[in-house]
Amino acid sequence: MLWLAEGFGAIAVILNFIGYRQNDVNRYRFISAMALGFVSTHFFMLGAMAAGIGCALACIRNLVAIKYRGHHVLATFVALNLGFFCYEFFALQHGWIIVVAYASSMIFTVGSIAIDNAKKIRQWFILAELLGLTYAILVGSIFGTIFNITNLFSILFKLYQDKRKQPIG
Image 1: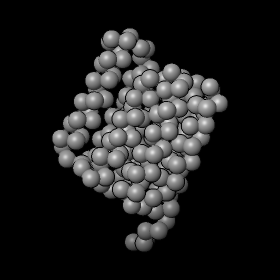
Image 2: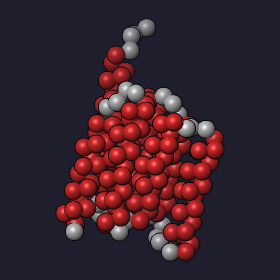
Image 3: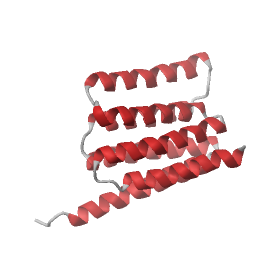
Image 4: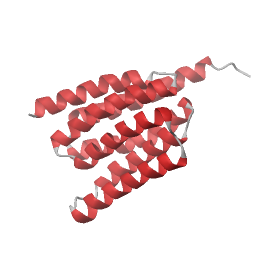
């Protein structure tokens, strides 16, 4: 079963690499939503509930954010993240590491809905990816770790490319 979980993670890595290369923010949101669906499945199969929930919410959030990005959408997804965090932490008594997963999810949530500029999204997502990387390492996710590392490199490379294209002066 581990090989199947890692297979879902591998597909997510490929899709998200493609997503981060997009210049159109809605194209990014759509491709990223597909990747998040695969990585959510990956984490659920590994028993990493916080990341599974966070990525599933992110998948839905990215699809919703293609058409709707108002304060009510942001508030809904923030509330869902906080609600699932409280359920996991207090009812299920999952360990402290879920704080890392949910912090990453919250940054992605706010960035995906409230920011409509691909460059600014990439800049905020560096922190979120670092938190996701920390969580993936802590739960022993091979492709979760690769997912976050490749995402970080994709973001940094794209920011570098965009900066080189800007006229000097």
